[in-house]
Image (cartoon, rainbow, N blue to C red; front, side, top):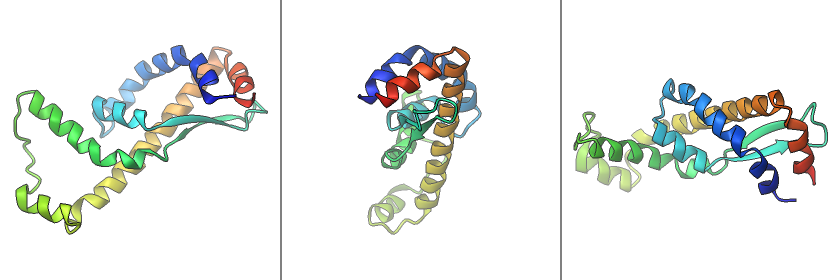
Length: 149
């Protein structure tokens, strides 16, 4: 059975969870656009679908690391599109860009790790919220059955 069968069945609940989760995104360090990018790299899985009581919806975030460097670009592009042109927090200019390209920058790696950890944590929170939504609507057992087929 493919993951798409059970995941296709929960599209409505995902849309509702997206709307409700928007407050948590707004309170986070991520913009709405960044969160959207993060979610494109997240895949959902059901652990132990044989037992709906102990089954758990989890966010597989193994691909998120690949998009972390793009998160800053998303906000920079948004700032320019809004007419800002130049970001107010000058990140160091050409010299720092060259150092970063050569792997000598050193400043972004810690930030990238922090963003990755925050993205993974939020994705897991989202998975928990989505599972709660499915349980409250009486769809969790059905989804578990589809996931184990």
